[in-house]
Image (cartoon, rainbow, N blue to C red; front, side, top):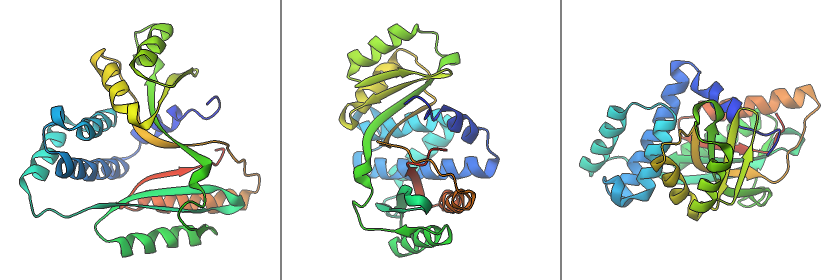
Length: 242
C-alpha cells in the first residue's frame, strides 16, 4: 500500500466545506435507509446497519442525525426505494474507473454518469470491463496520532479478529480484510476503543497508473469532480496514481 495511503485524502475530505460534508451525510443517510429497510432498525440485529453507523461516526455525523435517520427509515413504509447500481469505464490514458450509485431513478443516474465520463474524454464500458483490475476488500484506516495502542498490539488485535493484512504508514495504519470478515474485525477494534478514520468495504486497485500528460490529468479530474458532485454517486474507485 506504500505510496497509496488514503489517509491524506480522508483528512482533506473531512476538512472540506459544509456543502461537501452535506454530500457525505446524504450518501450515508441513504445507506442507513437501505440498511434499515433490509435488516430492521436495531443495529444489534443488523450487521449492515452497524457498519453504516460506524462509517457515519468516522465521518463525524452527529449521533442525533444518525438516530433520526434510523427512526425515519423505520417509520416510513412509503419511503423512496433506492437501489444500488454500478458503472465501469475508462478515463483518459486508460485509467480504470468504477462508480457505485444509490438511486431512485436509474435512467437519470446513468445519463449523469455517462455525461461525466464524456466531458472528461472518457467512456462508460460494459459490466466487468475494469472491475477485474480491483480487489474488493474491507479497509480500515487508523490515525496513528489518535491510537494509543502499540502498533504490534494493534496488528495482533486485527489479525486475531480475522484481518488479512496490516501495514504501517507514516501517519496511519491500514487493515485489510476479506469483505465477509469486515464487520467482525471492525467490531473487534470498536470494542477496544480504537478510533477509525475510515472503515468500509472498498475496491482497491491491483496496480496504479501514472498520468504524465497535463491535459489528461485535467480531463480525468473533471470526470471525478462531476461524479463527486452527483448526489446519486456513493463511491468512485480508480487506479490513477494521484
